[in-house]
Length: 216
Image 1 (cartoon, one colour):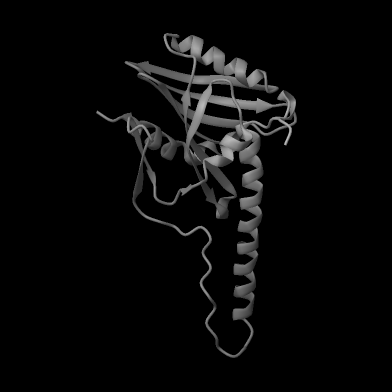
Image 2: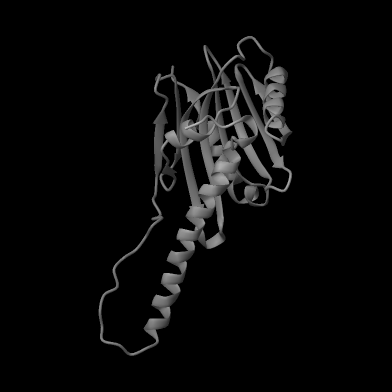
């Protein structure tokens, strides 16, 4: 297969939008199924037991993920679903990403909202200041005909936490909460959703981002 040219490559945000549409449609099918089941309850029919169908079951507690090199770990709620990382490796090539490490998503059908969580290892940023790294991220986004705007930023020893907006002409706007951890390598942990849905996930985003730590 011929390699796609620069304009034909889709960004991570574009891919997530496609995945969301697929998941949303499957969720709507489930939703219609539930409404159909309710309508049947009003009709006198021979009694029979409907099979349980829960494509996105609610789960309590937390899961923990550790990076393949054993240097980074984070916690996230158990109702998140991990996705095949090859989804990113096959379709996305960003100049700053050495390779994607983790991908998970959460879909709330009742509210038609969703969020994604990714972990990436960055390359060619050793020795750069926080400002320079963010400028490289903005430039990387512009090359793909998008815009990145940093809304908030907090820096501490070897850690940078920031919120940003990612927009694209004739496309949706995403808002993120992200953390860069600078060590021997630079890790980027990103939690993002549609801008309008960010308040719905803000507390959960903060908890997950704060949980990302280097393994001592």
